Amino acid sequence: MNTPQLVVHRDKELMAQAAAARLITKIVDAQASRGSASVVLTGGRNGNGLLAALAAAPARDAVDWSRLDLWWGDERFLPEGDPERNVTQARAALLDAVPVDPKRVHAMPASDGPHGSDADEAAEAYAAELAEAAGPENHGPVPSFDVLMLGVGPDTHVASLFPELPAVRETQRTVVGVHGAPKPPPTRVTLTLPAIRAAREVWLLAAGEDKAQAVAIALSGAGEVQAPAAGAYGRSRTLWLLDSAAASGLPRSLYPPASP
Image (cartoon, rainbow, N blue to C red; front, side):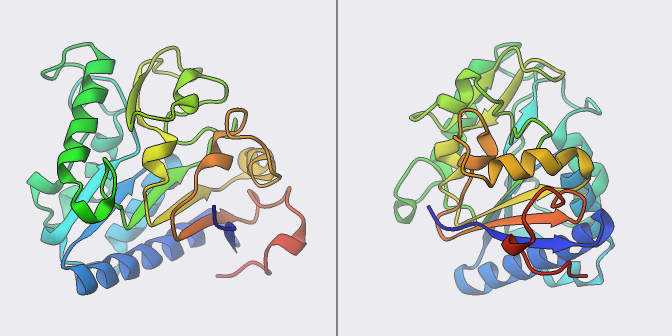
C-alpha cells in the first residue's frame, strides 16, 4: 500500500476543474505510451461535477476518445435509462458530447437487461467482461485501469461498498451484487476492493463539509471494513482530491495550503 497524496482546492468548482485537467493529462499520457487508456468512472455529485468540467474543458479534444475504455465502479440496479443510474448521468454530463466508441463504454447491467432482476448474476456478467478485457500483463482478472475514481460518502463508503456490509469484506470476487444498501436504491452492483486495488492510480473525490468527518476517519488509519474508503488504494498512486471544506477535519500538516 502506498502513502496517500492529498490535493486540497479552495472550493468544489475548482476541484472539479483541476481534477478534469489532471484526468485529461493522464489519459493522453497513457494513450501516448500504450495506445489506449482505461478509466473507471464514479457517480455522485463530485463524479458528475468532474465529468461536466471535463466536457467544458477546451483541452478535452487532446483525448482520442475512440481509444478510451470506460468502466464504472458501481451502479444502481435500476432499469436502463433511469435518471438515477450512474451511466445515465455520465452520458448527460459528458459522454453524449464526445466521440466515444460505444463498444468501449462498459456500462454495468440494468435491472431490465438480460439478467433480469438478479443483481448477483449481473455482477457475475460484469466480472466476466472485466476478465475478458484483462491481458496477460495485468496479472489478474481485471484490467490495470489507468485511473479509477471514487466518490467518498459521508459514511466513508466508496463505490457501493458500505461499512460492515458483506461486499466490503469480499477478498476473491471482483464484482458483487449489493442488497440492503443503507441509501437508496438498496440493490446495486459494485466493484470490490480487490478490483479497485488493481488500478494503477485510485483517485478519491470529496467536497463539502458533510464529507469532512469521513475524510478524517479514512485517513486516520481506520480499518477498511468500518471505513471502506481507507481500503481504496492504487498500485502506484493513491490521490485524495478534496476541497477545503472536506479537508477541514484534517491536521494541516497533512496537506499544503489550498491550491487553485
